[in-house]
Length: 168
Image (cartoon, rainbow, N blue to C red):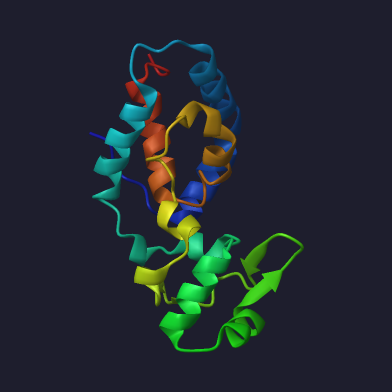
């Protein structure tokens, strides 16, 4: 039986130890015409793993990721916070020529490990850890970039290694 790992220090250590293994696994996934539907398998594993992990006990994504914000999202959240959009922008955003991001890491809207604007959260926050998205094999760079950051990603990848026969 697989034991879910949620300790971020353990994940960081194991991620370093497994760099070569993960590179080999990435090549394995990309190079094989696996009989299994990898996207479907990832989604099944994600459903199982997510049900065993309380994201509000972790919140590491909100503590460590840069969050992109669209104009519509900034409008929606400023309205939710009942502040003028200009004040929201000045207080919470960093603006580039074509990009806006939350101007601090961790996110302003994180209290402890809980999002204070959860129902209004940004699209990137809603999608993370993005294991439900199609073309998992084409997104391996991003998956492995977050492997040590997110217990869901870590545990899904580790179970995927077994499920695909990488460890046979």
